[in-house]
Length: 253
View 1: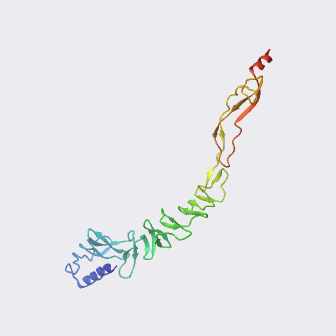
View 2: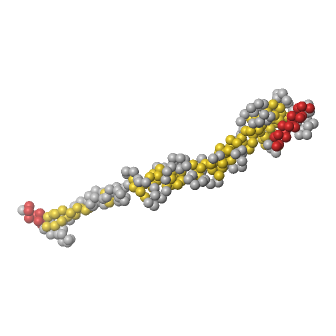
View 3: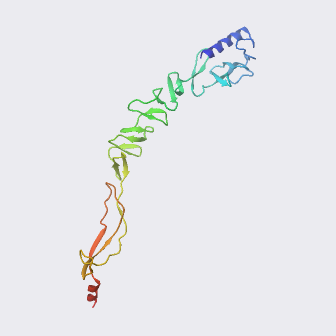
């Protein structure tokens, strides 16, 4: 800021005295009319660029190699804010932790690793707020949420609530059940069983010896066991009375 004011004051003195390239800063080819100046410049020099700006333009110093050159801009570049005054309007650099700002004490976006809170860039967020790395700001999470991405997308709930679709729930909705380890609602799993096998050999009850009167059995396998609150499995074995081959021969005679 002091450098900008110094340049402006020296140029004002030079213009008032009609000096040329022999001034202290060696402004070469000063052009008060602006025929060879960049857009927005009121006066300029080949060595230093813009020296003063037209009304409503901001004076800004840019690096040209190792040399600084003045430019006149309708709005200040990113990382700077505009300060207007009756004599000269200038672009002032934001604070070090601030990526863009509205004024010296009010940031609008922070650099990575800092989070915006009430116009300040903080390294951590206060209690009740979460550090949103995507937005780089402190955001208020939904009720029951400990960590979120945006206001309506919770990623971690309190230990007494269950996470589902970005929200925290005291109880899980129909079709879901709570997982206390994951602290989230998971889909219920209902039992699935396969097809029945063919009826087995007709045997006497509690014995494998073929007899005139007996029982035969068929079974089916569990393909998918149920979850804690899913529908239980139906019976997987059936037994019915049967007659042995010898008994069937007697009946046929």
